[in-house]
Image 1 (cartoon, one colour):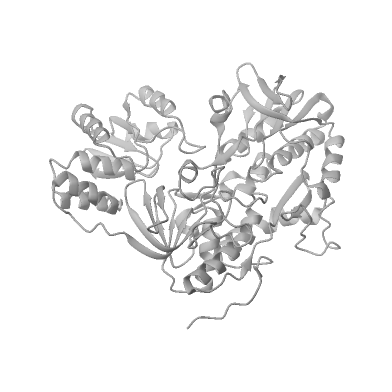
Image 2 (cartoon, helix red, strand yellow):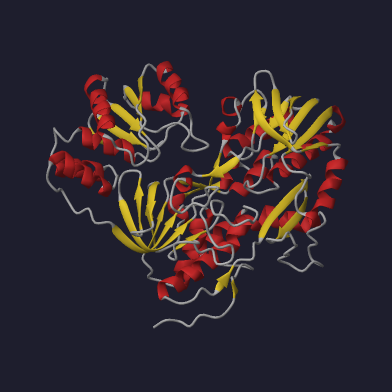
Length: 558
């Protein structure tokens, strides 16, 4: 919890959780105000949960949601009423604290000077450059420059794609004026959550502070994008701040759409419903699997595209292997429901994975899409390919949720018809805007959405972005490489590596690791080598076995 006092009676904070409320009460706050709409992020606690915790702690709670970039006079007036009528001190929160501090500043505009407002928010650590136009309007006079800060390269997203591409750029060209826009204080190594769910890794080992992993030379703009304006080469953040660029790299990730399945969000983390797609739920997966001695275990795979096409299979296999080792596998009825027409979609690796499914006695239901969950009744509803609906009872349900583009991307000029950042699959350049590139889970390339794909995409995007800055042709190409290290049992992995056409693209000689067969060496790579490659390789611009394919060698510019 990161509380930043702005005045003696008011403080702002990034997203809080119900578990933070007792500490907020102990710190002396009397009222909590939520300025963040529900559903902005997949792991965001619902306002109702925090309201319940606030009531239990004897605090007032007010829900005044403000959509990114929508600081309306009505919102300011409602917030001003809260400041006047609610007990203080007051703590308001949103995604980063920027919206809360901004609406406080505008509500105080009639009582404080603009200089005092900007000084108070800056002292609290909020850079409200984008607030100045709103203060201009409130005061009827300019309070400061509203020209956007411009960068050579602006990176949207501080996930694996954004940080790896930024590191690749700065390693190739020191002194580049580069900034990364990212709201989250922490970065998560998501490939490790499979092992957390299997009880083989501590969740704390998958987390780093964002400030500690950004490449040297990159400025961190802690905020979230509200809109893109490619015609003026600018983006606007949710607090109103504008930033310009010569080249834009868009790596925003995607949305885990829990709300697309009625009843799912409400029951996550209880009634036997879990998911390794959320780091905080992976320990619940571990506990469910370890505690299960008989009953019905249900796993699902949603329609493509989704992050790591083998993630549902990994959860299935590691759970089954745990039950096998405990001697209870025969007592558990395991069903895997997939929206696809086959168990695993890449033919070269399907025989090995099909064999493990048979070994564990898994019932496979193809063409089954999860459409509803009733947690208290422990029943899941699936729609089949012919439109019928079938119910499956469960004692444990591991959910892989539907996944979709982020709303801010889908509603922008950057999106294709499906809502993804519309890029050329080879160069990663936008199909309509020559100074914009996309990579990672949020772009339209038809590859497997994995961290390994990002490892290959980042240098391609970096090299081609530099060529764009130099006004030269784009030399680098991405071949669709993706990798799914499928943990089939403890100590063995099927290292599925493939490109756009599904053909194997092994990184190492097949005599060393045959990706079509389970391998202990591949397990050692996933468990021991891949995490340092991620943290110390990708994020430091070290491109082990990931250098871009070049159609020609660019000539260095003077």
